[in-house]
Length: 66
Image 1 (cartoon, rainbow, N blue to C red):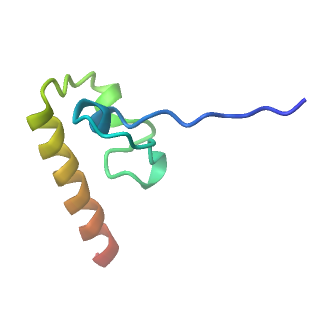
Image 2 (image 1 turned 120 degrees about the vertical axis):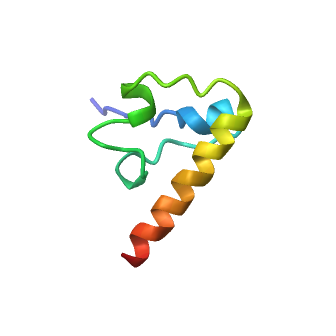
């Protein structure tokens, strides 16, 4: 029997209207799980979700050069 594990969609990207798979451990908001999901942050509108996606990108870029 083959077990297929499907990756779920990124919570923030979904709120911003973007289709993106969850990056899990490579995401800046991953701390043993999705911080957005663990804290039950309601990213509500697309504006907040887009801001958090931009912040995530800057954090990940900074981590590359740290």
